[in-house]
Image 1 (spheres, rainbow over the protein chains, first blue to last red):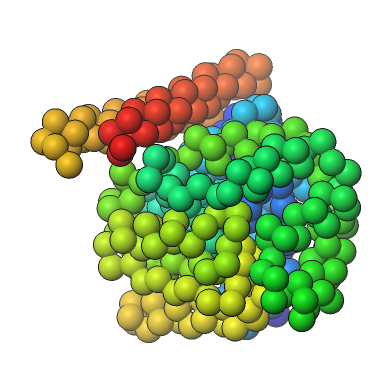
Image 2 (cartoon, each protein chain N blue to C red):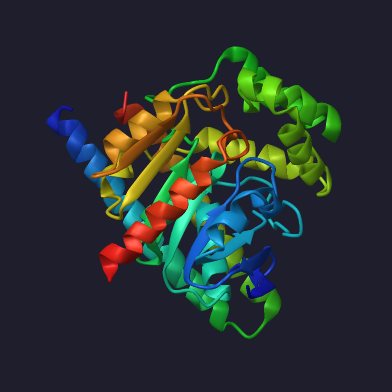
Length: 275
Length: 66
């Protein structure tokens, strides 16, 4: 399995985006969510890299990437994703974004449609007034999280990110996630800037313009971004398929190991259709 | 949706497309500039144009999508 990595420079010349590539085959770009580095895809990469070239990157301000501005938009982050594809020598890729990364993936498909072959939108929201809001205590946690120490924040986020069943039956998986995340420093300024991007994200009216095969994946027990948002997105994108994971919460790749395998099958299906 | 809302949404689409073209042109100009400080200024202007337009479009769509 071949690998590569590099730093991509955004047009401003100061925003630097660290990216990594694993495996061979059709390229797939993975876009991570709020405050997490590309390394948080550690469960998904080995599954997809069996047949695909998997490209991950640290969003601006996170991990080994650097940001120039202090307020982000999902439009800017989508342009970053296009910059990463350019740097990796990829003209067109399958794109899979989760949570905030799913919002960025929507914008990537709208702003750079020539770059996207197919789309997987995991545990994400279209934004706008029709989006289903999380409970007030979840919103309060997102605001409070910036003032918390890294490990304290991770543990406090568990009831929001994982279903009760996962917390009861698979605490080992959650601990593995925590260990992975604690290996990368957390930037509170990048977190704030990303929270701003998520709050202002609104692709609801533009989603019908997305013209690539799309799979929407959502955990029914998602507390961070309620499952109604997945249904809204699937209703708005022509021909989109919706896969609801009955037992899963927000971070479904941890809770349902079969989810990534199903996503790999979706990408393989697109390849067969194109052939 | 009322006809005027469809019309307004179409105007937002056109606005976004026009800003996208303008930003791409600014970034292209920045890329060709030989002096780094000047390049940064033009690129920063392009970023601001993109991000302010994104916030404007989001706010207008917010009102239209209600």
